[in-house]
Length: 81
Image (tube, rainbow, N blue to C red; front, side):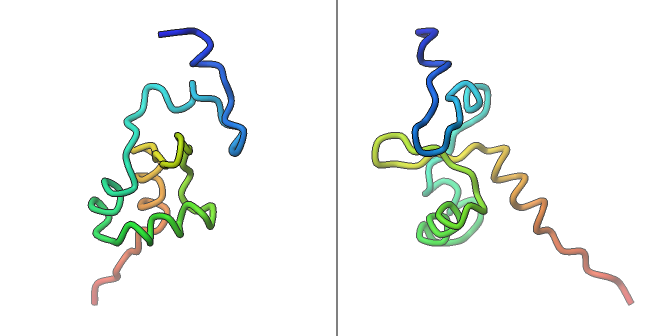
């Protein structure tokens, strides 16, 4: 791997690619399938800034850790009676 690849920053997000290395990158379809929602819902979450993503060409990739964090932050506790 080229060292430059690890240090370049994405012009849209300002996030270095090194921050995405070491975590599994998922496609929009994979995230949608895992969350049992449509691809459009995932695109909406990305656009709203609720789900961090990196754009690679015309496609988005989402870190698995960010999906887990998103779901954990929105978990609801149900109280027993």
